[in-house]
Image (cartoon, rainbow, N blue to C red; front, side):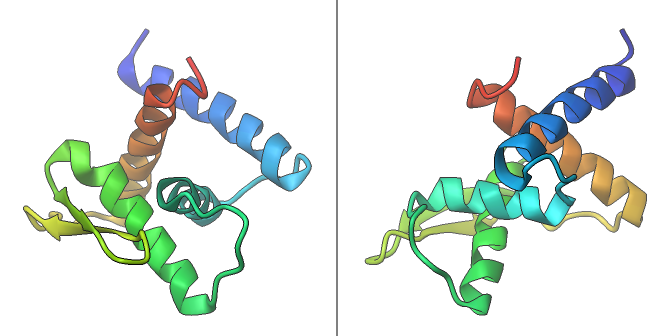
Length: 118
């Protein structure tokens, strides 16, 4: 199976599973999935977050997702338990479609590692 086809199949499987679990079957947007990953990485699932903290959660997720690609590296946890990453390499300029494919690929890989999907 071609790599693109496999990514598409895995993405659909993951997207449907997450949508059922977190949105009563309503299709989750990519940003919502990134937010869920940020919550997972922070590990403080049952608290409310302010708007700026929600953006920080998405930043955590993006750093974690792109870490295996060599763009970020985990640095430390602060006193409140928030992970911090350092930039290793700037992302190259990507078109919107290319960004979306990169993020979907990274998200699928993340959930494969977590054994949420196979």
